[in-house]
Length: 67
Image 1 (cartoon, rainbow, N blue to C red):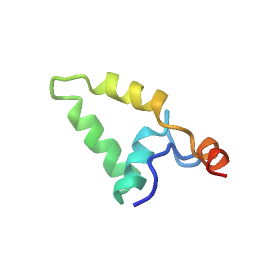
Image 2 (cartoon, one colour):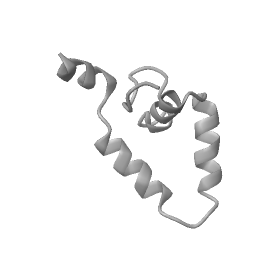
Image 3 (cartoon, one colour):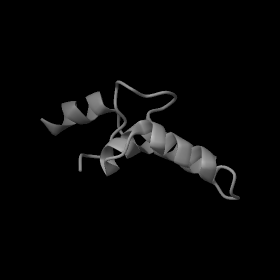
């Protein structure tokens, strides 16, 4: 498993689903479908997505701070 960061390539809106997919070893499309299906259920999915968008570092920023 890799670190939980938002990738610079392959992201659609904020890169949250792409980052989660990379972290858990699934495809980004699968993670996006899971997120869209979860939006049919009641809950704070959009707020969680926005929070992860803000809290997860971008891949290039995480690489710079790792040195």
